[in-house]
Amino acid sequence: MTGNGTKIRIPETGDPAARAARILSDVFAPAVSVFLICVLCGVTGHPHTWVGLGWGILIGSFCAVIPTATIHVAVRREQLTDRHVTRRDQRWRVFLVCVASVLGGMATAVLLDAPRPLLWILPTMVAGLVLAGGVTLLGPKVSMHAFCFTSLVVLAAMLLSPWWLLALPTLLPVVAFARLKLKHHTRLELTLGSGLAAAVMLGASAYMPTAG
Image (cartoon, rainbow, N blue to C red):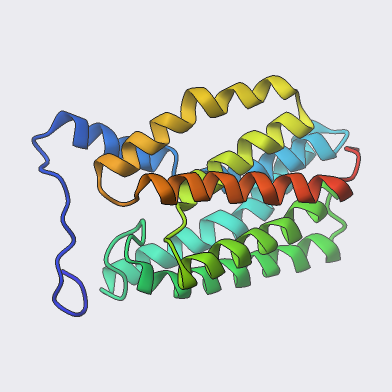
């Protein structure tokens, strides 16, 4: 039940496809992709893997863990309808929390002299949030599942190997299936999420630092 009395329709729990879609939506949740983005930037940006991992976990806590915890608290208090924030009119609050948390992570990264890839990816995240949030508030509801997963794959292709791009045609349809099955997004919103992410990452690649 939403705040104005409108119920969100969720497929029956007896439907195996719907159960799979819910599991996949959690596996490919935006917070998971964002946390992995931070870890990837930390590990590839520091000569000592474990130190870089620590950096990734620290900054990932700001960018993924804190927003997720905030969302869960808001859902329990019935300020949000669900943890994936499927109602567009509720997303502006979540975008603000995410931007504030990423900015907190950015301040921490700058003050503590984080690896350069992290110092690069954080303003890129802010730009992506502002773009996706603006489009969502003014037009179609951008799929953040598709946005964040595409960003992760493109980043892996930039930092590790172009072969990682093969994850897009193989795994992005899985994300799309989950979101469409649950009726949380349309094909347009999924395509828009992936396209905007690719555009943001390719634009940011112009000033991407070398790892190390």
